[in-house]
Structures are given as C-alpha cells and as structure tokens.
Length: 499
Image 1 (tube, rainbow, N blue to C red):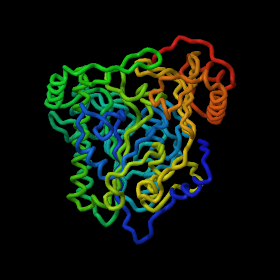
Image 2 (cartoon, rainbow, N blue to C red):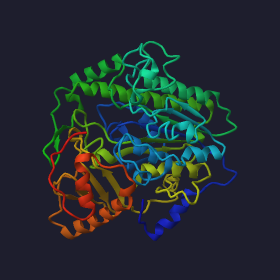
Image 3 (cartoon, one colour):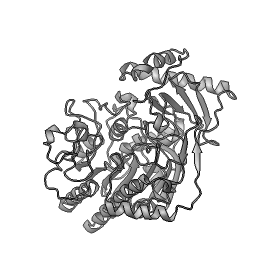
Image 4 (cartoon, helix red, strand yellow):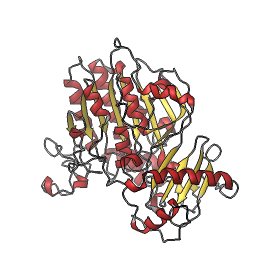
C-alpha cells in the first residue's frame, strides 16, 4: 500500500524502531479487540444506553484516539492487518473468507523472537490450517479458540447449536476448538475466554514479558447474552420509553434509530457489551494482582463498525462492511500506567495497521527493514513526544453489497485534507464529501467540486490498479463494473444484490 507522507513523517517512520534503552523494562502487551463494536457503543465515546464503566475507566487512564479507522469494515482482512501492519490490499484480502498469505510475518513472530511469551485467546478468523496461518503458525506459543471461525454457533457452552453434535461435524465457520471440554452448563463464551486469559497471566513467570492477544467473539452474531443482563436492559428501555425518537437518514433514504431503547434486541446487544466490559475489568484486576499492571501496554480497538439494520449506529452513515464512516471509524485507546499520562486525547488519524508497529516499538524491536508495512508507531503520540501524526491517505475497497447495513459495492479514499471520494460499482453516481464539515457524509459535493472529484478519482483508481491483479475477484455481478472503473470507464447500471 503506497502511502504518501510529508517530509515531517520521515522522522516518525523511525519511531517504528525501538524507542527505549536497554535499561527500560519491556512492557507486557495486552491487545483487546472487540468484534463489530461501533464507535458510539461505549461510554467513553458517547454511549448512554450501553454501560461500560470498566472500559471507560481503562480509557481514562490512558490516551483516547478520536479519529481511529479500520482499513476494511469486515473481520478477516482487518484482523490480518492488525497482525501484520499491512493494508489488506497488500495482503490480497477484502472479504471475510480470505486469509493472510502463508509467508506472513506478524507482530507475534517478532515479539516471540524478542523473548516474549505469546498467547492468543479468542476469535482469530484471519488465517486457516490450509495455508498454515492459524495462531500457532504465526508466532503464538499458546492458541485458545483461535480458528477459521467468524462466529460461534452459540455463546453458551458447549458452543454448538446441537450440544450432542461431534465437533468435527460443526461447520468450520462456527467452531471454537478446545473450549467444548472443561466447560459447564450456563457458561458464557466471553467469560470463558476471560477465564483462560487470566489463567495464563496468573501462571506466568514475571521474569519475562508476555503478549496477550485477547480477541473476543462478542459482539458478533449470534446475539445472545446472559438472561439477567438482558432483563436489566429491557427494564432500562422501559424507563426510557418516553424519550423522543430521533432518526438519521442516509443519502439513499434509509432511516436508522439514534435511540437504542426503541428496539428490544438492543437489550441483548447491551447485555453482550456489558459482558465484554466485565472482561476488561477482570483483566485489569488480574494484572494488578500479578503486580504487572503499571508496566503493561493495553490496546483497546474494534475491527469494524456495527450492524445497522436494528442497532444504534450514530453518529455516522453506514455500518459493518460499509465504506462509509459508520463502518470504518473505531473506538480506540492506549493505556500504559507507567508511561502514558491519564486523560490524554489525540485527534490524529490512525489505522488498525498502526497497532503492530506500536507494540513492537514498545517492546524495543521492529519488523524487518524489508517488511513493507504501512503503519506508524503511535507511541510518540501516547508518550507526549509528538503532538500529531502527519496526514495520510487512507483507502477502502469492498466490491460487495450489504444493503441492510448501508453498504453498496464500492471503494473509497480519504485524502490528507480530509476529503473523501466514494467510487460506486453499481452504476450509481460517485460521491464526494468534505469530512471536516460533513462527517455524516450527507452532502454530496461531487457536482460542486468537479476538479477535486476528478483528482481523487484518478488517485483512487491508480491505487486500486496497483493491487487488483493480485486480489480475489469482486462479487460476480460487479466484476465488469469494477474493471470498467479501473480503466477509467463509467460503470453500467446493475441491480444490487445482497451477498
């Protein structure tokens, strides 16, 4: 992925290299990734219906990032990017059934080489046994539940729809291997993953640092939660029933709730979020009990935006899978009690592929010089030695349609000046937004600024052409239009089809 940056960025690129002396105690690293969590789904980023006191407290003890992005609004490629520090286009990935290349070097590989104990706990969904890219293939000493699966069959033990079905008969996409044994009736998956993580922390010899990659399945479907928590939010919704309903309309006329109390299913979603919040609280408590909390870098992030067909999705347009802001803007924070000033906030535009470079810099190491990564270390921001990252161009590509989540087959580019170009592959007209004044992407300026639009279209087309030959094909009905657009020709109108 070609990223154009200013000369000022050259020094920052060096920050991906070690930043601490040999006398500094290397930190433990905990990377908490939540699945399908929207930017407005936690209190620290504006949620009022959902309750996340532990996450909010964690974020308050470190740096909150207000302009965090993911390079694609779907699980697998975003996760591969979070492991390799590369844009998904460079990895040949854009959809949930794509896997990282078999020669991938991950942050876990590098941390293991640097003497870290490396543990993966939870959802993986960015590799496969066929191309040897499961956690234990790419640098993790321990792998608990990491597999091809993008969601469990059930959030309750034994994590299968049919509890008597042998694990080998459970579809690959729904397996959580290793957790069927040793469970108990009523056990909830988010709790079990936390239990496993805490056991690893408790047993660890503190003479060496560890890397815990705690990637929850929650809050991905199936939406299931503990009954008592669901009831709590049902009652809360009833108390709020008199609130005025507010809606947000996207440019295609779809209406979304801004008040999550309006749909009972949000009570289930809220209950799932609360269980994730409890997990974060338990992890922090375990680190403190072990005496290692102060020297542990804790990263909190989501892989992509939330569902939008019945859940709250404000303040942005679109959601999961969408190249609009609602699909690609993420809640994000770094906490490191010994190094990062509490209550810090940064407005730099960051991306999920910055995280591996950040972790390696904290550990005093880096990717090989020929790695070809796309990220920058965020440590200069978090440590207060740099006020802002240089402006960068971000690119998105998702040639598939999910109308129920506000996504139409498209690519998008946001430039250094915060203008965003949407290239539609269904024959609809393209769109141009100035995110500085229109973060909801509600005012298409393409006719008002034709020169800016032409410039950004060309830049986006050049970027996509650089990688298209090595990418999996678009959904079948869009192949011709994608290739027409990449040649600079207009798309023909096709009937959108959900995939």
